[in-house]
Length: 297
Image 1: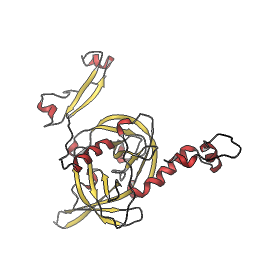
Image 2: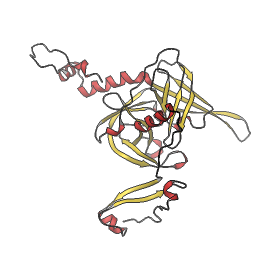
Image 3: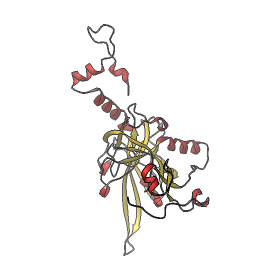
Image 4: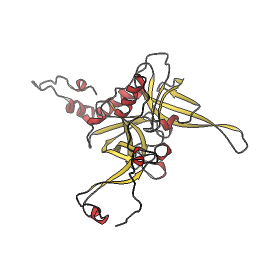
């Protein structure tokens, strides 16, 4: 977001340079609304529509195509695109549609099933705009975020919200493996948003919209994004020619303390209770075990 666009001389204002609220008031828009508009205008051209096609057979052994829809975003002028792995998982064909409706066949460069990330590439005929990757390690609960994507096929939809929580562990990755360290947000994320960018108020990508918690796949204000620093680590290994594999303990934990901790006959000062252990994970090999029963209080 270019704050310079809001810093203008104001007639009769003396040495006062900041005119954002005055300009916003004149236009009938608040400074926050202007920020939303600027971020959207600066990011929409680099947000893409991804169609993946898998060929299957019906009970009569007839081959038919199954198409899935998702989002992604361009990260450099050569046409490389970040998205979710589940958007392109198992696909025989991946097609990318740019905002100007130009379509390209995409090559899959990297698949990271564990973190539900993928890197694909198109060969554009012209220079394409791209998004700047931010730093998800510096996120704060409460800061504004903006999500752009293609929910239910509605192209280039903008929603806004805040960071609701950090370091969430959720179930629902491929093979039902837990995904750790997720960003929770109340910015509306729905089917088709997967793979799209979660942006901060400066227009930098700080997450990749990945999953929601809600009935029947609908949004109720609980969405999750993979931190962009996870994708940056994947990109670093790809550039270095290394196989990307992030260290993983393989446990789902919940913090408990006080009365609940005592009810479970554990120390009152609290700690992390291991709920589940992923089969074959380092935690399982080390002998760590998850809970064996559920206690309702």
